[in-house]
Image: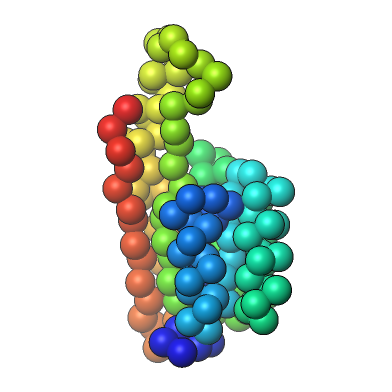
Length: 146
């Protein structure tokens, strides 16, 4: 198992690529934190991981709120003792129920996409238990354009 005893925090871990990464990382032996604004979706990801004998924890996290990010990272470190991998995957998609573009909606989506990359780093880097060897990985996934 390539990720045995590594802790991975995956934002957007309730569905799509985040869910798939959470399940794959767990299958490779990682302890996974599925961080997502959708608490039920994150919990479903965790239940699926646990059914396959993996270790996982769901943490409700709105990555637009710094306190949520900080609380999620703290929960990960308190539960598993270290942090090795951060996958900054949370995204925002055009709501299907909103067929017309409004300026506030477009501004919100653009702001989120432009400010997302550095959003989690300030809370991870100081937790320089960021791995027992003072090493870790941060992966920021690109988002599609609006």
